[in-house]
Image (cartoon, rainbow, N blue to C red; front, side, top):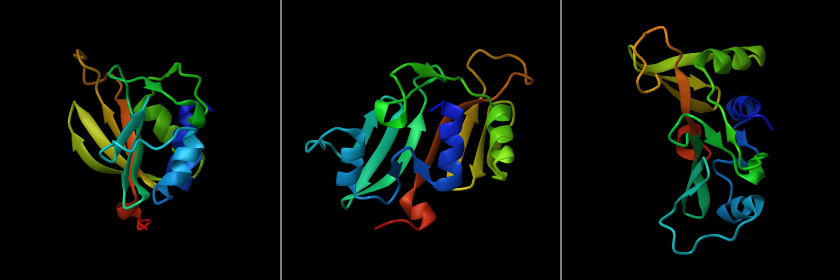
Length: 154
């Protein structure tokens, strides 16, 4: 699945491929095709997928860029371990609007970053390092949601 479609699905349904905040952790590990990490501290990263497990459930779920504002999706999210992106603020907002998902600003730091709330997720955008012009595109850096924020906690 293309990254932009995955982001729109996450915002509109709260699901990131087969995963959702609030789901039992054992189901998440099964969907990822991996055994749980018994030595983990509850915070996990698989490629660009970030999630946290608390009290046996997925508590926080999201995607975090790979350091260059591109994303590497694990196979469970339709990725083939190749980079996706970068994705611009305008592309994401237009795709969300096309699906009837309204966005609202949560926090903006002029000429540097902005955070939007869209449906069931928060999206963070940053100006690439080394950009000198305020007209340079803001690019997606992460998208996520918390079970507690959405009332999905177990």
